Image (cartoon, helix red, strand yellow):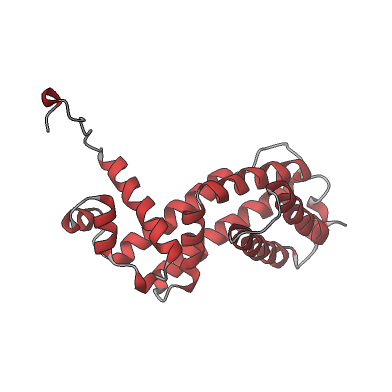
Amino acid sequence: MTAKQGGPIRRRLSTEERRDQLLTVGARLFSDSPYDDVWIEQVAEIAGVSRGLLYHYFPTKRDFFAAVVERESERMLRMTAAVPGVPVREQLAASLDTYLEYVQAHAHGFRAFHRADAAGDQAVRRIYQRALGAHELQILAVLAEDPEFGPVARARPDTQLAVRGWLAFTTSVCLEWLRGSDLSREQVRDLCARALLGVLTP
């Protein structure tokens, strides 16, 4: 129907907008179902595009899932980026607030990202592990520069392992929280903050 006939005008999506739309649909499907149970045809149907157009953006299902995982990892890294000069205790609370807000607002993407570790595809798992590694290094760098925690973090041989374990703990807590925990966002934030600070307190 044309605008002259009184029908709505449908704006053509840009390449980036279309790609983002497809990844959003993919995040929802991959969060609800294992990798092998998601079909490219489903994505195309929900997005209202042809299968050929979807393959134009992502040549294979592996490429598509990898792009979903990468988008979520980039979001998380941006949100938890270090703020120079801010003490760890203060920065941790602020970062967790932002992170948990993201987890709530983008629950499908968060779950899809963490499903990547269970994916049978090694290329996808490498993207996931690389993203976790970057997050781990980000936290270690903040700790090393902090006047309170820096000397201890640099001196202890188990600091990196502690941070890695804390990331796994925080992920598990968030996934359980999304399943319907009665805890408020503030309670989850304080729980995760205490877990890291408790391990690193001199």
